[in-house]
Image (cartoon, rainbow, N blue to C red; front, side):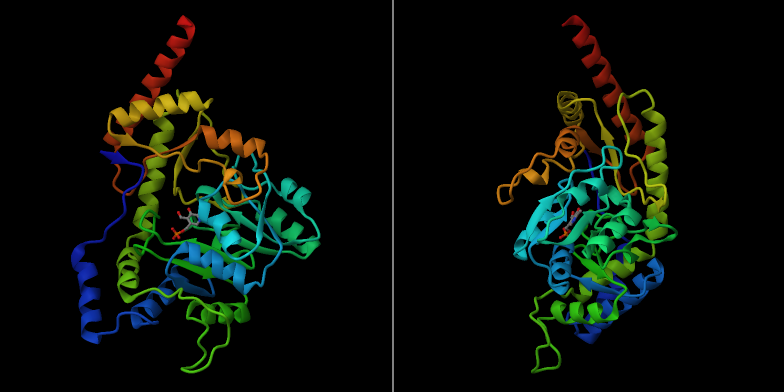
Amino acid sequence: MINVNKPFLPPIEEYNAYVESIWKRNWLTNNGPLVNELELKLKEYLNVEHLLFLNNGTIALQIAVKALNLSGEIITTPFSFVATTSSIVWEGCQPVFADIDPHTLNIDPASIEKAITDKTSAILATHVYGNPCDIDAISAIARKHKLKVIYDAAHCFGTLYKGKSVFAYGDVSTTSFHATKLFHTIEGGAVFTQDPDLLKKMAYIRNFGFDGPDNFAELGINGKNSEFHAAMGLANLKYADEILKQRKASCKYYDERLVNLKHTKIRLQEEGGFNYAYYPIILESESMLLKCMEELNDNRIFPRRYFYPSLSSLKYVQNAEMPVCDSIAKRVLCLPLYHDLDKFDIDFICRILLRSQKYQFLNSLLG
Ligand SMILES: Cc1ncc(COP(=O)(O)O)c(C=O)c1O
């Protein structure tokens, strides 16, 4: 079976060495030494000034909205994982959707401008698939209208923008270290900011608002992560360069094998350094996608419709027509991509796709 994703696992002895150290200290959670070590090593690896390790990427988004004191409307993308929208609603704000760019699939700055009202407090944009948004344009809009910016950078481990980690942009950037991400801590996430005061506030929020044993500086939540999760992160971090390299090579191989497939690829951000987190293809129609998927599934290959459906169709939001997103969400398919996906697997996947498309074409000629 070939799934869309397969979590990376480090050699078990390397994880066990950390677990033995946890046993010795009997310190399992609450800002332990492995959490501190992981935070330091991540800052060094990513070359960012500040970050807080959290228990998942959804809490990271909610903490960002809370810490920035946002209210009213937040302009966001309809093409993302559900947590991007649900976090806004969970924090009592209203998501207002702006359509996406048809080439990058990231939020379109021109649509953001059109959606601004006197109730808008922020922009929450996703760097889709690890490909950075037009950060310069979004920053200019935010400056002009005095809006805060949060980037959902859940897919962005290793992504650069203008030579810097993409996590260094926005008032707050958030990420996910879920097991399906290219760097993971089983469950986990982080917030990043350049602002030391905001960092302090988010650190309080992460730990119930505690400021000393009997004092509360903020309204908080439990956003902490454990020593066991930090241990997985530390064990995995050693392999991050290798994982990034392997994914790039697999994407290149897909590119070569799929030259004759009728599809479009996402346009990469010119200022960006893509991390090859996903391999999305955009097909000509939803029926073509469904047929390709069916044939892949018959061969025990499970790509994923990601993201589908458009978040503007969720039950708990004000629905809006998003023509570009609606069309893309129906036609985009992420093909299997993980660290040890081999060339034979990619050959097999591509052969099925090419054959499926050929038969669909022949059938269309027969009427
Ligand atoms: C774009 C995006 N945002 C947020 C999340 C939520 O992250 P987590 O699963 O760590 O809560 C994900 C997870 O897949 C995601 O892809």
